[in-house]
Length: 70
Image (cartoon, rainbow, N blue to C red; front, top):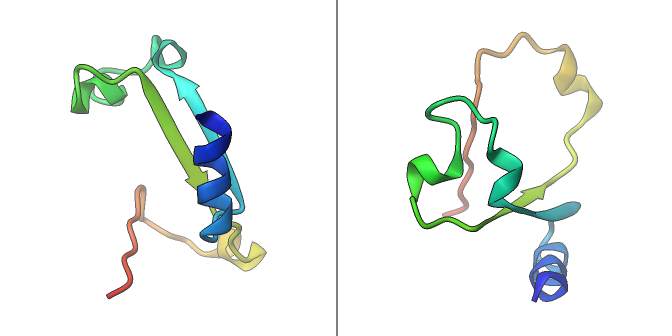
């Protein structure tokens, strides 16, 4: 199942994909654990895309971002 999820993510444009068990978040600060959003969470799927290096030079105040195509 893990490989199937990763392959779907990569085929749809992700550069990297990983799956972590909820135990990896045992030391997360209050409000930052996946179980704070969904108490029954058992795994977390993370997908990432490469961004241009120049973005590291921008003084951004954005902590979290979300982008959607319409």
